[in-house]
Image 1 (cartoon, rainbow, N blue to C red):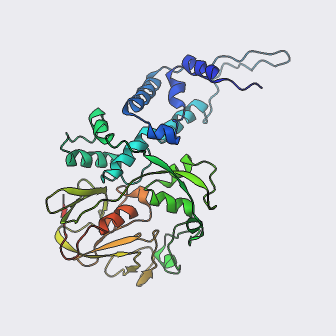
Image 2 (cartoon, rainbow, N blue to C red):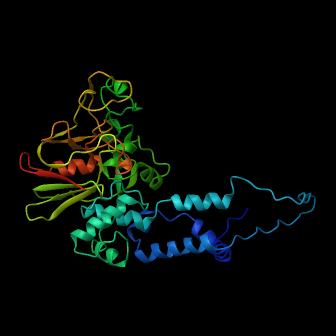
Amino acid sequence: MTKPSWITLALIVTASGPALAASMPADLSETAINSATFADWTARQDAAADAASAPAQAAPEAPVQDGDEPPPSDGQTQTTTDDADTQADAKSEDSPDPFLIRVQVLLDRAHASPGVIDGRPGGNTEKAVRAYEEAHDMAVDGVIDDALWTALSADAGPAMKTYRLTREDVDQRYVSKIPSDYGAMAKLECLCYRGPSEMLAERFHMDEKLLLALNPGADFRSADTTILVADPGAGPEGKVDHIVIDKSKGELFAFDAEDRVLMSAPATIGSDDTPSPSGTMKVNGSAPDPTYEYDPDKNFQQGKNRKKLTIPAGPNGPVGSMWIDLSKPTYGIHGAPEPSQIGKTGSHGCVRLTNWDAEALAKLVQPAKTTVEFKG
């Protein structure tokens, strides 16, 4: 069979209208992401809206060839649950967008963290947009619009870069599975990453699914493999004078002594069963790669575990890769094993950030000086 030319494909797309165009997956190449613009994104949105409002068109009947039996007709309409157009539309809606990837990288580089860089719209990206707007004296609405894009794109550096895996990346300790039960966790030596792709996704502030989508077929267990990753840039700098943890916004803001925002990040802040504290306290200090002391009499009941347990250290532990201790006993700001769930699930009263946001914050706080206010 002769492979159709790009001209033929273009004619097919044009003839098929916006529905087919909207269902086609976005280009996630390095060039496409680094050159993505607001105009490109709005054009894709308009095409998707047109496709959603367009009336369904009946598929043309297949011509009957010599020797073929005509399809049976019994007056009934046949239906199927795996309609190709429906699947394509759902896949398109769920697919990461090159422009949103670039926006999230630029927000992260401006220290308005969107949580995981995943190329999809969501509450954490909206929080990051609002934080950026507030920090830059813009109208605050959390909407990605032309004004926001003009400000963000002043950073013209590439959002994506290539990275070559090293022997250290491949050979570091990994575990095949992380149990959810604390008793089972306590029996392990390390709550390490489950593999190089998870480790590298966190290093570059990405959702692991996006990392895999950007690098189909890549061998993450082979040194010298070259992959495409986000470029979140250098971490924030300065000394944090005070931290505001806004429960109503689900967000953490770190300020210097002149009340300038050094960084902001989406946060999981307590839950209905175990709410976070109120009032103001201080930072005692921070501890990288912390173990976790589970005490059901002081903390909460996890599963059937009714005895004290020491949960080993590791990025997939209950408090992630960093613990920032607060002056109120048993409370802290810490990392999390599932960065994509920040702001989407509850905590046991503490403040959860992505591991990388917790690590960045720990470098800026001043033990016995930095205050932490819970509000909202």
